[in-house]
Length: 349
Length: 261
Image 1: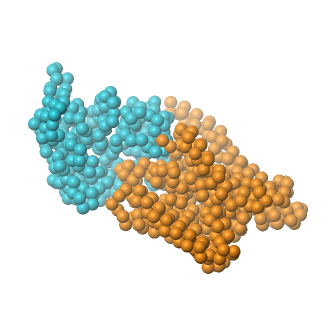
Image 2: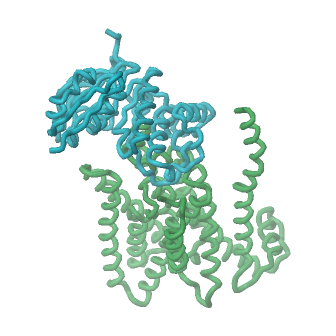
Image 3: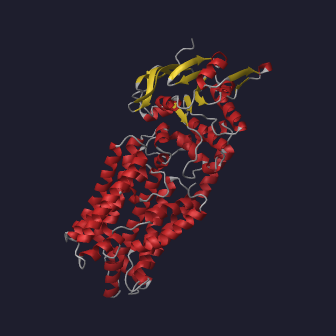
């Protein structure tokens, strides 16, 4: 019987691989191609392939120079940025939701976005160069979570997870106050619009070197999530049960928090705060593939990448001016979230 | 008498942080033996269990497995030896019963590993041993409380432990499921497993335990065979209400029932 079962599994493998692996990748590539082709300056998909292929092989593509510039300098960084940031935020959200055993949790729960925002707003307020603003945002995100984790560890009287969340709320409130203060003090003509824009998130200013700069941090953050993907399931049982099952939660919990924080801080440092992706996408992924983190993580990565790509496409085509991403993700995310709450049977219980 | 006990607890004090809940507790559990812990709410049963499982450090005294103190054991080694069966709870995420049972293998797997062939085989064996193989593909959050309790016992068994620690395994189960779980506990002990469980029903101790321990205000108030220890007098001292203990004819068991105050 076991052998028959193994045989049936082997036969089902190619079909499953196609359905779960190949199709999503193909859909993502098509969406990327569509995003590269669409915009004020339309470029036929064939020309895009010619430009990209020519760039990779170092050959002249025969496509006119304007189209080349639009594709390589304007749209390619956006598409790459959307893929990397969307995937990272969704993976961080899936991790936090499992870790905190709460499907309402987003990567912002420990203050990473608030810390990154304060860093960026301070950088804009001091009129620092872009790279310094991004660096401050990154460090601000990591610093805020370090403070929250330190406070949580110092207060050992209560459930460690609850303490962390409450410390996150408190620290987030302080950071929010500091951001508001800087907004009041900022120059209303030069600085305030930049601050507002940053707080709503945008891919319009992302360059390929930016992505190169955050990619190492995102990959380093994703590595423990990938390696410990099965153990992550046990973390969602709660501290005590996971420990009773032999899991060194006192090692793994800070490791998972650090990994997800690193990914989130790196992502928001170049795009500004983009809410809702880390909350919604893991839900959808869970509905599609179930709660097992071994499937949930890749599904979240793919869906997050695709979702942000699609939202960004809408953001830059729907109106004569670009709509900030944070506005769109909230407008799409919140009703969808309510719909999930009302209808989902298997999302959570 | 029967060689080295599986678990020996010596002069154990237990509690949270600076607060000592109980002290001076000592008992032993041999392979194949079921020890049932009885005591009123707040007597320290759960704290004692957490200390046995190494989730809380012993405040004094020792917990020994086959003569060796577990104080410095790594978590995985402790979990491989002593498995915990929590009360049937509603898990948050909709894992399948098979996925839940597979989690019992964590203590036998390397950190970066996913369950392999041997782990799947152990999970199937545990499901079969509890007669819930048909639930494997069901969603844990959608099965009944009794089925969940059986799934949690299967999860503990999947880790191939020597001893089970069960926190009120019959709590919140209906009459029939209580009997089914107690029957499973007997079957498991017949396979050589040691079992420590807590219950609020002295009748359950008569049904499944080889020995009972009475815990009152953090101290042992009795330890021995159910028929010796569970007398109307001792139960009244323990729970503060008059209790009738009535042996049924023909060796059909013993009934404990309170007299309403």
